[in-house]
Image (tube, rainbow, N blue to C red; front, side, top):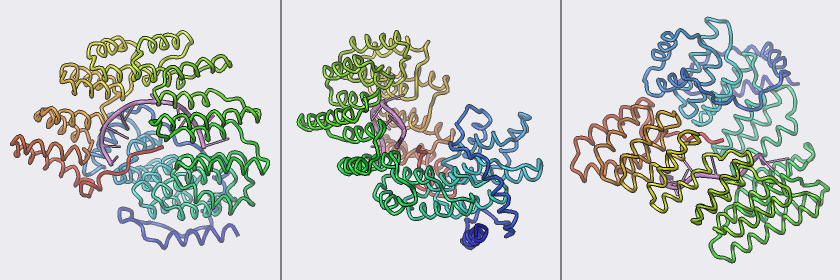
Length: 532
DNA sequence: CTAGGGTTAG
């Protein structure tokens, strides 16, 4: 039975057309395939994708692959130069960096697969397979993704539940919900058992995350006889309605679950609380009052059911007060929280600091910052960013620079810190600090990224610094960042106005060269950025 | 859409 369905699935997959980059060399021998699969599916699948770790070689490789026409020549040369052997670890890290570049990722994947087969009699790891399926999915090349999935089975490394999670996520992200559900139904043929409740939750969660709670609900109602509903399933659906700004539906679901005798837990309540509080306009005072009242009511209700609000519950409420610029209320709630013996988290502190700083009460904010440190909570870059933003608002260059220099020793920066500072100093035309901060950012290795360059070029254009703008524009292209269309356009307008048409022509030529390497026109080059 | 950049788990 299992074997039969597996064969027919494979046939169906085989008959579809695959992308031209890939030359199939398929054998239809399915006996061994099934055996391999069932033996490999008993291994525990890796639920999470591998983390992006520092790997200079992967950085170099991915950069070369993005910027070069023929990936194989530059791909082999750095390996030979460094004398490092090729490994699955290196492949995985390179693929992680190439997530949004389907062609270079696919080339390196195929190269690696053949390399392993030819030289080491080894195979590409399941992680690498999952990553290439993810990348193909991002480029909406689902036929190719399925093809690779089938090949995984032949290679004896999967596909695992994680592979299907990836494939389902890519389908849903592309808006292909029906195909996602079909992939879920095809799982059984590959992993040799029916998907369990956890995997069903994954499907519902993916649908909800990408704002298809309606489809998730239909699926849930259709299959609740097979998968016994629990509080996690309901929480997923509640979060789905909250994400699409329908807290009323979320509320109904909470009632439904209580009617069915399923006890909501703290996560359920916090999710709903968040749904009530986020995305509400706080501007008319009545709107704010209404939001706060419904939040307070929910807090009371959860206490009635014997669930004590936790740090997260308070963080959500504090965030609303903070957004509404209510420093007294924020502090009051903050004290109340601590009186109840709930210790603030870094997020809680950051919310309060943000509120105080944005209301101009910098002294109070600094005091709280000190208190954080004495309580053993190291302020995050985001905490400091609140101060920089306030200084930006006040145009207080000296104070911002002073804080920046003080912080240099502790090094508590992230890319946003640099962006806020850069934006500020460009706006105030202080180009000395701009240079200093840009240099620091490069040295720490935190940046620059596409946004840093975009910000800088836009800023320089605004200040009519055409020469520098062109220079940075060139540099970003050299580094493999493709400018957004707006960047391109604003530089174009500026150069025409400044009567610098020859410069423009040179830039245009360079961009076209880059774009052609990806076999597409300007827009196609721009794949969706990585999310989640 | 871009811009601005940490409340979060389901």
